[in-house]
Image (cartoon, rainbow, N blue to C red; front, side, top):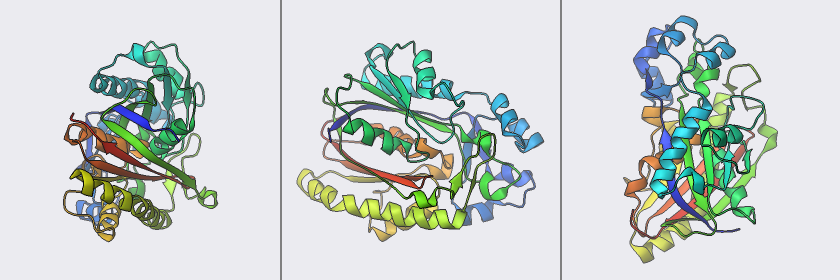
Length: 334
């Protein structure tokens, strides 16, 4: 496996806010207390107009797709430009585009091709979708490849509120929209290095989390939550010894970032792993479950706080059932 150098991270969140009060006013049997007790989420962002959600509860996902204020391509373009700016690069430096997530906007063409088009790029582009674990899976596959161009752009557009049923309180409270982007290279050094990637799956659970074609998101909530806690904890505990050993040498800080689906799940994992105050980074309380964009958007929001000697551990889980983990070592100043 090649070391991937991480040159820049970017993110984009749409401006429309679905807070718990808004969901209460939909009269679907939910409340601020009910939501916080189960998932710890205060608010989320959406590409949907709020008046549309109020009027229709997004009963027809096809109408939701038409009503959306931003396409996956546009949010992907914005996140990509953010990542490229941080990397000190322009779109012309990109030699390949990879995209992946939970809810592509079309069967074909590949989302990566459309994002590349929006950036005016004529480069190899393809999708590698693995639901909420796509960010980790994308990087794992890239680290396994040879002959990559100097810079690869990885984009995870997640505007999944387009397929949420806002008459179903069990799913309406979960999802928010976000897009992340990362610029990586196997050739050009950077201050952040992805030194470990893993990928695994349990296809026996393939029906546990589903977005049917032209249908609404659904999941087996309790079973998925148990899977998320067990798998995230296992990934974290496998990476912790090596990370702690490095930090004893560098004097740096540990940062754990998990799949941003449920704050209570993440807190349980951090507590069981014995993480100290401040070692757990998350944004799920303010942005909801943003699918494959969740963990990388957290890292992007903290990009300037990563300093030399630090190590970030990422564990993501998704439909399939799939999971992936990353260890990112930092060896230079922002």
